[in-house]
Image 1 (cartoon, helix red, strand yellow):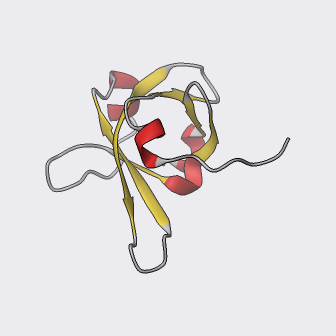
Image 2 (cartoon, rainbow, N blue to C red):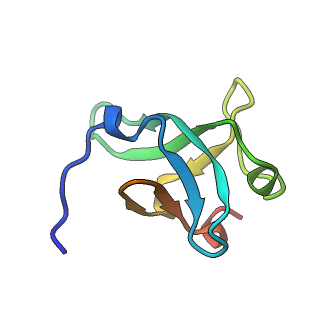
Image 3 (cartoon, rainbow, N blue to C red):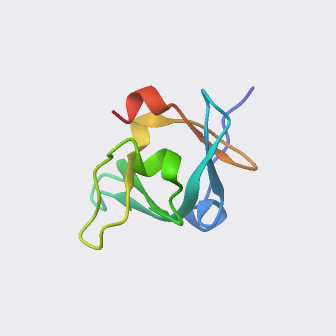
Length: 87
């Protein structure tokens, strides 16, 4: 399956789903990246569920959970992440 470019605006507002359990973890609020290189760092999560909060992930300065981009497995109708890479 060929890779396609996805705009940040297409990802914001999508539900974040666990690849292992299929549970919803939250909603994409924003994406942190390094402007100079374009390297994607984290997904900033809003409306985090108990499933995500129980993993004790890092948070930003506003207390919103962060999901490292390395945990993202796919982006389509949902953003699918691997929980084992969050802890």
